[in-house]
Length: 134
Image 1 (cartoon, rainbow, N blue to C red):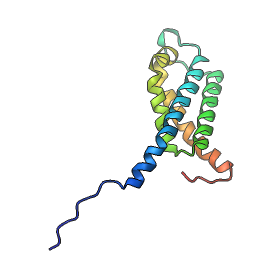
Image 2: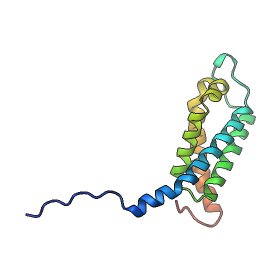
Image 3: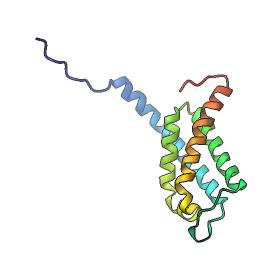
């Protein structure tokens, strides 16, 4: 009877590839924080924290942020998963601004930003002739 082989750790090549992506991921998280903060800055805070529907200006502000993030993710040659992680990291950093600007809509806006980012990431990747490689 042959003893089972111990499972090996991830290869050093894979670990090195992941480490080399760290600066790009961190860069995208900083861009995400900047772009999302700019979008939040364009909003009118809800009265008494009440739920309000997005205005056309809000939709446009977050649309600009999403486009900028997708362009940067493509420029850095990142995967869509890395884009989503950067958005969520930035979202955490913006907790005080989110609370004052979004009130109860915070979770809804995050879901919309993530969904729009995923959709645009693949649309813009397909549109530049490179195909959905990531």
